[in-house]
Image (cartoon, rainbow, N blue to C red; front, side, top):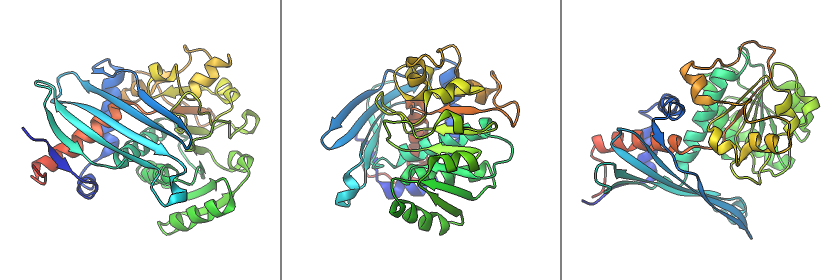
Length: 323
């Protein structure tokens, strides 16, 4: 049996018919209920030039497929006119182990499932009224995280932080063309003062926000720290938070903002809850608009499983594959 192979254009067309947020919500619930097999992340870290490659894989008990995802991020590629991310998804039949599908998504599905997870975190953890969205990071996730919030909040006001004003200006132009109002800043404190939903979407290895600047009622979705070296939040912020949720508490033991805060003694692993348990209603999400809430998204294979299976089944049903 030869696998069906689908390219990026086919994948993007398929996504128009799907609801990634719903699929990934169901995946988070399955993960937190113990209905999945998700081994530890495989990763390669590179220093010259800086980059990383992740291998994430697993399956849901009783499903048709198991999935292996390979995705990379090389952040200096933009200097050479090359996209920073690449990758593909491989789907195998659980009952036989045969390779049945290859999604040549070039890392796009990783971006989609990450943005969808950010929307899910905001749905259950952000304040009822969002006055302005603060974004750290002018790249793909800095844009997509905001775009996927359209189903969660009517807010279209953004304050963007970047490395320099040119980065911010390019982001401003792109997002204003999509109907957002954008205020650039190079001062992280300005975002903390003016935004009650903050997204950190950078590869930073040093905290971008300080604890003393975080106001009551703020929600932060931190999704850049997907390796042990990365760190976007001052661990003291987690120490003052009323609710901390991780996409995978097992992964958060070794990477992400929870890992950093536990390492410095600001919190213990008994404090964070798992996002899937909030989605299912097993654990409450935000209880008041005065709470400080944090979602630590390290990226879990269940997201890759859900998005790739949904896309593959849609494309297969239309017989668009090349055999």
